[in-house]
Image (tube, rainbow, N blue to C red; front, side, top):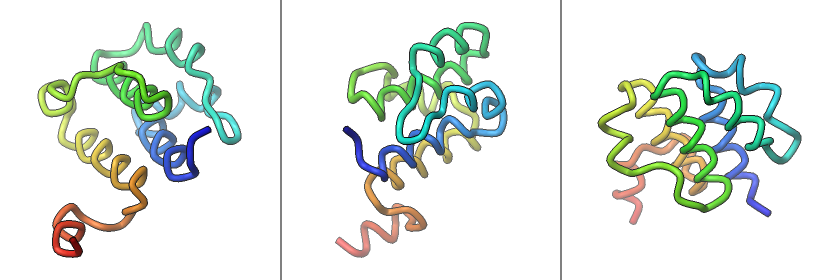
Length: 104
């Protein structure tokens, strides 16, 4: 079972504006239907599919996306969205990377 932070992080990725309408039916209370999301992703663009794979990797802790894909395949807005999701998963929502470094 994943933490609330992990749920919130995955939900943040899956509610990106360009995929939110297509992913909403697969966002459940406390979980996600990744079988359904994978089927839905088959007709998405490459960047949209990557967001679904990143969400799956965050939730299942199984390799689904390459780190190299983040900076090469995501537009700046979705790149920042994924970074925000990682901060949410760590419980650092609202903090920037610089804030986290300065606090260490």
